[in-house]
Image (cartoon, rainbow over all chains, first blue to last red; front, top):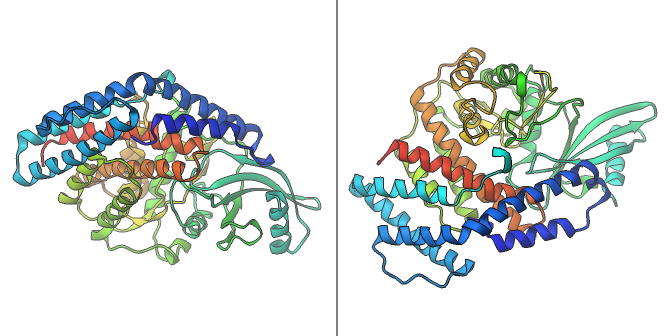
Length: 128
Length: 336
């Protein structure tokens, strides 16, 4: 979940433009640039899938919770703020289901966790 | 004062002879410390050394004294530990705490996410890797330098100590609710593992990517001892077996050997039996510990001015991958 994409892009810009001491050149600097390039590839995935993943996850959790609050505007920050509220409520619901021994609800929540993690996946180029 | 100048001044003082520093270069790896390679030159004598200095922001908040003593505990054992040379907890001429150890040349560390990182030598590397892990577990704790600095948990308390620690890290560093890892923590607390037969040294981060190999099947140096502690030896085994260190579709542990082979090698080297129930607990724990580390990485990246891309990678890509592993495991285990 963290870092958020807008922050990440800002951070990568800082990484590339911040002055480095002489001992941090050579292979180390090349490795850093390679890592930044890798993160930009992942950032492109997040830009493509991130909003839809958040909108889907928020709706899926709200459904499990029976929450009928209208979805917020679709900015990253509004989606993430709503997601934090819903995730907190989901944790509480899961604890309650465990304490009550409600196996059906637990299975539903565990399946939701898998789907949430899958929706937010990032894939390294080359399958690494 | 530049780093090279400070280092030369320090070495001149502690070695009692004029020492210059050449070929100083930062190297990748060891995200919890700044790591540099350099040569210390005194007349015709040239020493290849590694400096590990505390950063201003760190992936893992660890005690460099513990790391130094862990290396010192195994430098004369057959586990490919470097030699621990100097420790300065107050920073001395370098402003921040650091230690210096011997450098092992001629090796490479595989990237933990590199597909088939060991090629045709994977089996030989795996044999040696899990043997080293077993030998660390086999080593009696009493009398080791690490024993003077590390907490000594009772066997029955090993799991709780570690779970409390890493849960505390998540509590402190989490910036967004994480229902998946929280569910795993509750499961671990509700169903603790049987205690180990004895308490051992746990390296804490023994996995693919944290050792140097020669490209021909030999392990030259085991690195990154900063999370070393005393505990249940299955913790190291479970950590190395986490699916995070294996590429999708590769059934081998850390791209080396099959899980069954890994357990057999470890069992033979450690002289210890493996309780399947205990190993299952520590394997789920390994993913919780991983998520705690990645959670810290995200916070360290943010707090440190967003300048270290390795922290962003850990706190983002690796955290997402760990959530996938955790959620699959939780679904397999089913309701509490």
